[in-house]
Image (cartoon, rainbow, N blue to C red; front, side):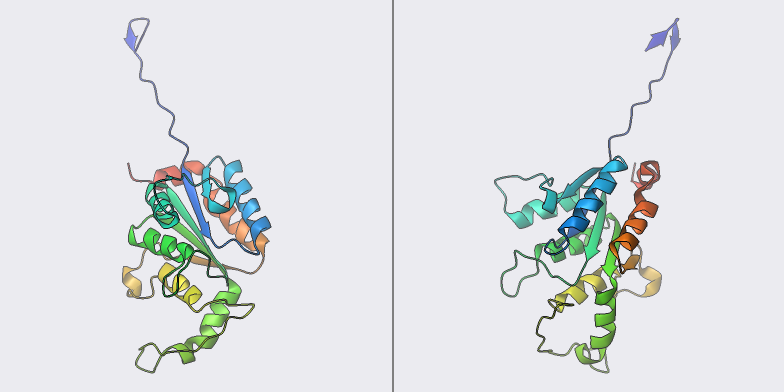
Length: 203
């Protein structure tokens, strides 16, 4: 483009970053509404199944649509509570579990929150879940009000990348929270400045 006979370079505005929020829904709906409003208020496009904002291809099933959303989002926010999630057949991982595993596998730009009850339950159950040599035990576990399924602990261990040596772990920061205010404070610290997130995205 020319202005007074001189070339002018126009800077194109960067697209609005998309943040996918992955979590179970039951029992924390008001909190998820707060997370959605907070991220949207910072200027992000927010994909959240609870709010019906994940792009859906009617020709694909729920698992496929959710995993495709993980692939396409710019950033991933996983929230781990004592609930394991729905849409799970016997012996299969829940949609939420698969989303989190996929985000780690694809090395997405990601952040995780975990309720403190989960970390306490993990510490208490460690002696029952594993043998002295580290091999897993078969544990007959019945769901409780604090922990619905032992696989919630596997979700957390996936997020912290427990299977890797500490020196090889990246993107493994998982912030413990007790109150929703704690969680929203972490979200503010990490997402308040969209320019910072854009700078972390690959070119």
